[in-house]
Amino acid sequence: MVEKFSKSQLSEADIISKFILPAIKANGWNDMTQIRQEVASNHCAIVGKIAHYS
Image (cartoon, rainbow, N blue to C red; front, side, top):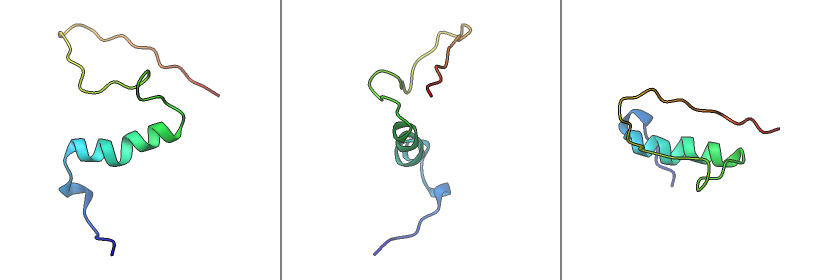
């Protein structure tokens, strides 16, 4: 039986692991080389580059 739940009852970590990461991986991203989570910052500007693959 499938139990219904509200996304508002889930934690941020639950939302990421159940919805966001699977969608990113389904689009070809490699979680070992392209995805980082919970990265500490030293309050400096964060400069990034997003690669777009076709």
